[in-house]
Image: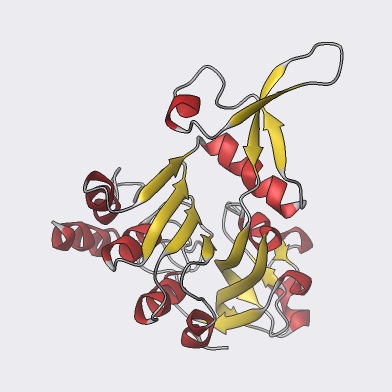
Length: 250
């Protein structure tokens, strides 16, 4: 598929999950296509970075669900900060562990998963909709019931993929992209290069095959498609471009 064909499948009001982490391996080619699309009123689920910021700047977002929105070497994403301070978006803030359990619950088609993450913190105060449950076993421990982060569409960027949707990461971290793929009704994968299926194992070990074709609705070949965020080992983050991005936001 093309990036614009993927974006055309996203309708206003949908919940869109975006893989990667902060300013690392974000599917920016797909995000830019979404910026060009007519879709608005989106709920964005993300370990947020410039993906969230750009969509907020373009007034595409109604709600953000995230543990943070950062550019990593620059702590606060400027467009998200402005939208949040101006009250233009609703923000549901979880800690990183709770967010992961929400993805896990959705990936396993569960309504929620229990966790200790968030207990004793202000997460429960700023998210009054969260509930707790008691263990049915002898200890009766009280736990946070993190709701499933279900999504209509997930967008992820990997290093390599075949045309059938098997996708591979070659960097140091999967960034939970497999959970996004499993948790969404449809997942679209962009990649640095589409290769033959047999060549995937020439690129990296079998453990690097993060996403199965059974999870994928479409593949987009997008060289440099994570830029200016990093996509190790193909390229690092373009720090100069990131600084210009922040200056222009100001």
